[in-house]
Amino acid sequence: MTEGSILKNLLIFAAPVLIGNIFQQLYNVADTAIIGNILGDNALAAVGASSPVYGLLISFSNGVANGFAVIIARYFGAQNERELKKSIALTYLLSAVMAVILTVTFVAALHPLMKVLKTPDDIIGKTENYLRIIMLFSAVTVTYNMLAAMMRAVGNSRAPLYFLIVSTIVNIGLDFLFVKGFGMGISGAAYATVISQMISVVLCFIYAWKKCRFLIFDRSELVFDKALLSDLISTGSAMGLMHGVVQIGSVILQSGVNSFGTATVTAHTAGRKIDEIFMLPLGTISMSAATFTSQNYGAKKMDRVKKGILCSIMIAEVWSVIALTAALLFRNPFVKALSGSTDEYILSTASKYIIINVAFFFILDVLLVLRSSLQGVGRKIVPITGSIMELVLKTVTVTILAPKLGYLGICITEPVIWLVCAIIVLADYIMFMKTLRKETVK
Image 1 (cartoon, rainbow, N blue to C red):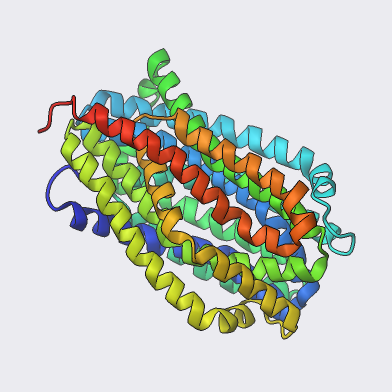
Image 2 (image 1 turned 135 degrees about the horizontal axis):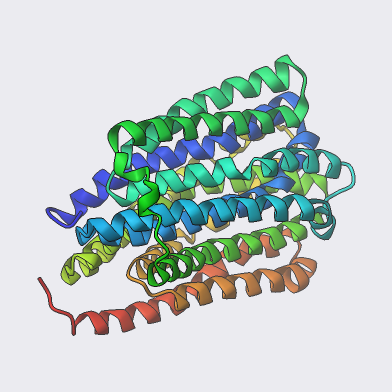
C-alpha cells in the first residue's frame, strides 16, 4: 500500500475486508433472524439483551488485535524482517494472555452484569445461557481476530474473507439444525456460532502454515524485547480500550433500553442490527485507513499518509449518502424481515432508531477515519480520550435523558456523541498535520 494509486489501493484492500465484515456480521444477524422467526419476540429480546456484552468481547479483542497489527504493518512497510517476526511472535503470546483474562472475567461477572443492566426477568435466564456459552470459548474469537488482523497488516485481506464465507454458511446451517431441528433454543444458536468460528480459526492456521509461513513464529523468534513488548502492549491496549470503552458505553445504554420493557428491547435489537449493517462499510474504511497510514508512516511517505486519510473520508461520505437513501426507502421491510414481528410498536420504534442514527453518519465518518488513522501513526491519547467521552455521555443519557425523553433519548444519544468526539479528534488531526509539515516528504 506504499505504492500506486491511493484510491485504488484503499478500495482493493477494503473490498475483501468489507465482505468479510458483512459475513462476520451475518453470524449475529442469522442468529437474530432465525431466533426471531422461529422462537418469537421473547427469545429475540433475550439475544438482543446479550448483544452489547457480546459486542464488548468482540470490540475489545478486535481492537487489541488491530493494535498489534498496526505495529506489524509498520515493520512490514519499513521492510524490517527481524522486528516483523519478533512482533508476530509476541502477538501470539499477548493474545493468549488476553484470551485467558477475558474468559475468566466475563464468565465470573456474567450474572451480576445482567442484573446491573436491568435485564427483564422474563428473559434474563435465556440471555445468560446464550452468553455463557459464547464467553467460555472467548479464545476462539481472540484467535480468529489475531490471525485475520495479522494477515490484513501485511496486505492480505482476501484469505480471512474466504474463511469467513465458509464459516458463516456453516453457522447458518447449524442455526437451523440446532434451533429448529434439535429444539435447543437460543443455546443452539450460541453453539452454532462457536463451532463455525472454530472452523474459521482452523482454516486460518492451515492457510498461514502453507502460504504465509512467516505468520507462524518459531520459538527462536519469541524474544523478550522490552521496547517492542511495550510498544505492542501500549498500541494494542490503546485500540482495545478505544473500541472497548465505546462498547462499554453501549452496554450502559442497553440498561436504559432494558428499563423500557421487553417490547422496546425487541425493537431496539432489530433497529440496532440493521444500523450495524449500514455501519459496516464505515468500520471497514476506517480499518483500511489505519493499515494504509501505518504502512506509509513506516515507509516515511508522509504525503501519502495525508492523502490516504482524506481519500478515506471521501469514500465514507459517499457510502453515507447511499445508506441514508436505503434507510429512508426500506427500513420497514428490513425490520419485518429481521425480527419476524408484526407488532406495530416494535416496527415503528425500530424505524425511529434507524433513521435518527443513519442521518448522522456523515459526522461518524470523520470520527472513525481520523480516530483509526491517528492510532495507525502512533497517536494514542486523543482517540482514547474521545472514547472515554463517549462512555461518559452514554452514562449521562441513561441517568438523565432516557428518564425524561423516553426512548427518543436513547435514539439521539449516539449522534450527539459522534459530534462531540469528532471535534476532539479533528483537533488532534490538525495538530498532526502541523507535525507532518516538518517531516521529509518523499
